[in-house]
Image 1: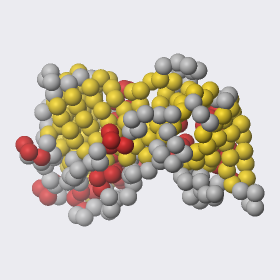
Image 2 (image 1 turned 135 degrees about the vertical axis):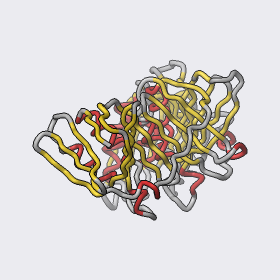
Image 3 (image 1 turned 180 degrees about the vertical axis):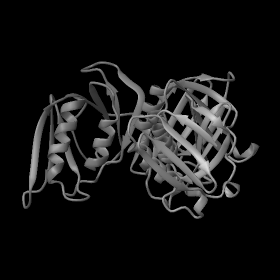
Image 4 (image 1 turned 45 degrees about the horizontal axis):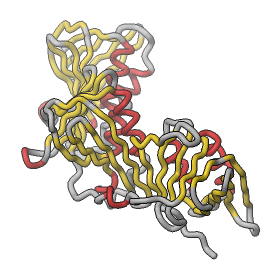
Length: 374
């Protein structure tokens, strides 16, 4: 194998492919990055039996072949190279890399022991990359991070015709985002549970149009596939029954508050500086005003008042400040609209363009309140 490739092209492709390689692989070859050169160009791929990644780039191929090298080492080398073309050749059990006056020699891993990457499932439809990445990021903040409850570490994808719904919950909050896309088949109806970290990391690195492909376990191993601009990723789906999250949304609300998003975020950040671990930020809504408080009189405390529009009776409610910041930070509107029933029942955050304006219900973030003592 022998080829020449531009430094930036190689470094970006290696970094993207190597990002999903396991830190502590169960077998040595899974730490490897496969380099495949043929008449179509250069392909780089990684696989750990859960997630696969493959990037295809243009290169001047002098001799076809394959080689398996340490992915993280190659990534570190590539990002430190001078901005000159990179020549890579295989010499026996070594891969030689030359870039300007810099030279590296890497030991190869046994190609024959490397697992075959899974095929992409049949394409389900397409969506603009920026829309998909933003939607996934909005929902991923609510996904669980406790691997002892793997079902809650996923994002639920529900496809019904031209509407895609993403949902995630860790039992203390719930995020839901809907968007439209172009399905391959009219009337498509698919549900899947995808690891949130994999989906979020992949979505934000895609460009142009994203091809989304899903296969259920009934037709083989359950996989999700994402492809865009010469890059593709597959991931095994999570197994289990995701909570019936729609039943968690309140059927009615008694009070609605609208607050400018940016000042609200900054005030929560400031006030929560005095909140001890696991203690809440208290929000008191009255006509024309929101008062935020944290801490107690015996220790450090803070309060701040903001302008707010309230429709309904006054209400005082408390939230985990980190969860509240995540919910507000996921909004892409000038104002946040909060819907309440009672201080002990979940509140729903949506976006709004301002006082009295219609809410943007594409994104909903449900927060469980913290009970106030006394």
